[in-house]
Image (cartoon, rainbow, N blue to C red; front, side, top):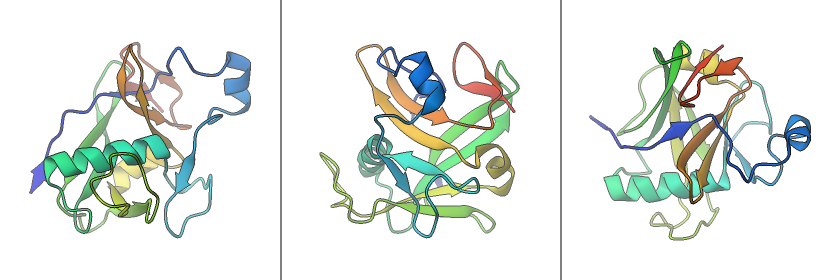
Length: 167
């Protein structure tokens, strides 16, 4: 059984992002990156999340009634959108047989955490992983916008809406 949650996704950066030159040098400046259990930091064959994304995933899982022990956040890519591929993000009650499962945040406390610092799981199917390997999932909350950011090194261009890309 899957549960769909309405969460805004985008690849764009906020007005508070580092200056363009600084972003070219380090697009993760000022972010706290979390590496999945058993993975190396900034590994090309992995996915990382920020502390802000961890907090938002935990809060949303609590609201949706998704158990951190069995369920998780499913990240995916599907055909469509302005640039050819679209990001897909939803909750799932369990991983599928061939999914890659990443575990984040065991013991990492976040504000308003309904899970009690329990880890969250992220599921990625094999086909989507081809486009998501090496990416960082961030969550941005500003006066102008709120939503997840896919910071994806595989994206060669993205559209104005920010939720689709080309690889």
